[in-house]
Length: 212
Image (cartoon, rainbow, N blue to C red; front, side):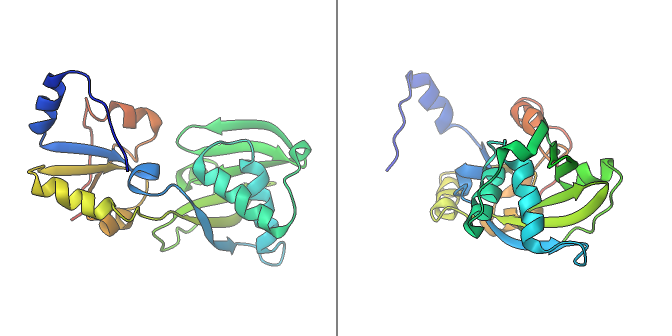
């Protein structure tokens, strides 16, 4: 059970006339509780899935992003804790990922755009999950697929809003259209909404894409 306090009747009146509602995805329409559902190793002769997961977990270990936290949590299920002393020169690149040194090796973890900007060209897997790509020592190593779960009441809530006359419901996310289709929400993004474009979206709608 949730409650909200609204100060001022004029705001309630304005909400009653709203015809468009914008949601963020992670932790709002979804649970925000991620699991690692797949690990793909690009160079299986050089390392295995657990070793790739170890590099990714150490690379993401200083981030508070829910996806990073899930990578670390899932790695610790192997029974091996993160060794903070192995991580140096950590840097977050907004809308891309992270860079750092892991055990002395330059390491990058992030999205496909980040990898391409670094000169790597990984093949994107067919998945509705979030893909975290990993590169280390000048090589692209593989990726981890992170899955979030739709909240059990999200679809019913969206249906109820439409029944109340809301014409357009938008979910802001950098994820793929398939995830929006699972919720029945029209998906729009401005270049794959990174933190700053998300904040600007209510006031300035730029290039958009919609899902049926």
